[in-house]
Length: 461
Image (tube, rainbow, N blue to C red; front, top):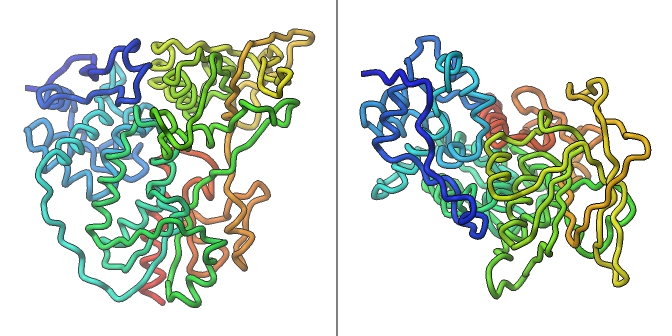
């Protein structure tokens, strides 16, 4: 029988006052009974509006129908026809603005919990004894992928399934890109990321870590000397931006990129860490995106009283509603319509406080959001001994500066068409390296499109 409940099955989670002191995963996942009950809320729409909201075009009604029948293996098979990283996407995709926003059930109640079901299916599969993966037959062509983040992994996976000899080059010592260094353990356990990567390796994908393309080897050398016929650049956007206000060079000021990398990749939160990091007694996080929420929630777990300052109102926050809700539950304070103008120093050069100007909203700016303007003469001082800047990132200029014939935007993004083709023949790009910081699933969608275009290019070549 269909489940016509207007509300979705709640996801079991750690209690806020428990989880804000540990790095264990917050959401605990559906049971089999909860997953089947939730799947029965799906109406199985023939025109599949939910799938149109998925950047990688998963056949959502088909996989949910299999969950409703208890055929979890069949559901996983449907998902992985389109997605290389289901356990990741089920956790970090903004489903509420993508597939779930198109769900018919959302018109008179809550949409089907598509993301939670995807996570359940992936976790169920990963808990089963590992099945032998059949490596596709080689087609005799060789491709390279720069960067092992979501766009690079999606591209590598699709190419490997078509029989290409694929090598992924990663600058850091651990594969996964932003999935490994950027997203905290309590949102995305690193064991899950590595399991997904092991699945790609089983398809024949080779991963070379500690390889900084543009320094260790160039794009041109990969093509001319190493014999790669086509290359995908998915190097992300890891160069942090700052506000250029007085005091940003003080001790105790971090970019969110550095702060999260040290916590996630170097495990700086663990007792006896070789690279310890402190969030102080009072931390101020500047920004309102998912990265700001991640930094704030990490600082809370390190023992700090945390305040997020954001220059617009809560209505304009770009972060996922679920992440904002979790941050509030964990005791993080939000100061809206507040913009830092100066960071004050102690006598020994450490952060003492943050001077902020109060703001008010005006007409929408180019982003479509209401523009914040200063409220004349209205300032507030917030005590702090740690400040984390999370106001965006841009692509590292290393690749563009060492690759002949590669056109880029003024702000550093690589210029590529809808299929990822760049100005350099055989070279494709996608994800944050092209768009600037965006979502995991959009990066994966770009990687998949580029893989299809690279396949056509190499076959025709």
